[in-house]
Length: 151
Length: 301
Ligand SMILES: [Zn+2]
Image 1: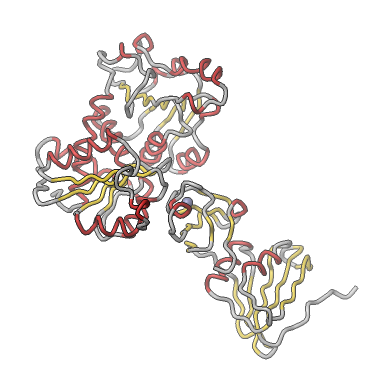
Image 2 (image 1 turned 60 degrees about the vertical axis):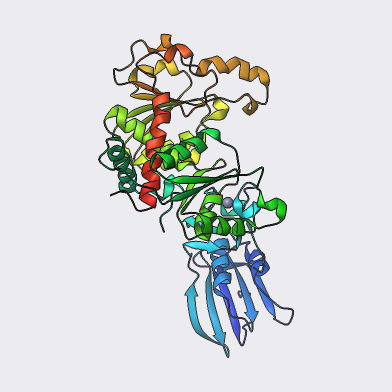
C-alpha cells in the first residue's frame, strides 16, 4: 500500500519528527493567524521513531521562542524552511539552557506567581524534559507545567 | 554584583571562603569596618532571631541598619510594585537583607537592584546564611567538613534548614542518617542531589539505634500542624525527643545542633552537657553574618 503523504507547501515551515500525539500541542503554542494554511499529519510512519507527527505551515517562519517551545514539547522535532517548494534550511530544534517567559511556575508561593515577574526556567534534563524554576528552585517534569500560549 | 541568594549557587571554594573569613573575623585577624555602611533589613515575614542576628552583626562592625517590616510598611497597600519598593530602598542603603514568605523573592530582588542582596529566608526555599552558620559550627566542632556522619532528626520534609545543610555538605563526602516519621521524610530531589554529589544516606525511624555512630545530630521541630490526625502526632512526638539518657555511649566529639527556637524536642537536661551546642551555634550566626556582609561589601581582606 502506498504511504499517505501530507501535501507539499510552497513557502513556509515544516516541523517534522514530532513525537507521535504531540502535533496539536505544537500548533497550539505557535502564533498562527487565520490566513495561514496549516496541515497536520498524525501518527505517520517513521524509520527512526516508529510513529511521528508532522505540522506544515504556509508563510511562516518560526521565532526563537517558538523553536524553544517546540523543543520542550518534543525534543526530537526537526524543522525545515521551504522557499518555492525547495528546502532551503533544515535543522533539529535545540534545547535551550534556559527558557524565559514561556513556562508558568505551578508553585503558588513563587515570586513569579505572586508578583508580576516573568518566569525563567533552567532545563535540567533533556529526555524526559525536566525544568527548574530559577526563582523558587523547584523542579518539574514538562508535563507538570503549563506552557503559555502565544507569549 | 555579589549576592548570597541560594546555597545551590555556591561552589565548594566559595563555601570555604565564607567559612575562612568568619574564622579570621572571630580570631581578630580581620576587623571589618562598616562605619560608613547602612544595611536595609526588609522583613516581609517576621523573624526576630534572624533580624537580631543581622543587626548585631552589622552593629558589631560599626555599621548601621534600617528596618522595614511587612506589616507597617507594606508597599502593596499603597499600590507600589515590589520592584519599586526594592529600587527605592536600594537608593537609601548599601546592602539589602530580605526575608519573605514568597519563594524566589530574594533572587528577584538581586536582579532588580544594583547593591548586594542577602537572602534571609524565602519561604520553604532557601536560608543560606543559616546553612553557612551551620557549616561554620560543624567545622568548628569537628575540625573539618569532610567525611562526617550526621544524623538529621525531626521534620525533614518541610525543614528548610536541613535541606540547605544537606545541599551545602553534599560535596564533602558526608554520611547522613535521616530520622523522621514516615510522612515527613527527606524529599526525593534532595536525596538524589546528595548522592549525585557523592554523599550517602540511610533512612531510619529510631534515633537511639544510630546515635553512637554520629559526629553530630541536627534536631528540628516536628510541628503538630503537619499531622492530619492529632493522634498520629501524639504517638510519634516522643520518639523524636533527645534527652540526656540517650547520650551515654556517644562519640567524644559528638554535638547536638538545633536551629532554635526549640519547643521540647531537646530536653533541657541536655543543655548542661558537653554535647549541647545550639546556643553556641546561634552565637556563631553573628560572626558568620559579619563575614557574609563584609565579603559582599568588599571589606573582608
Ligand atoms: Zn517558581
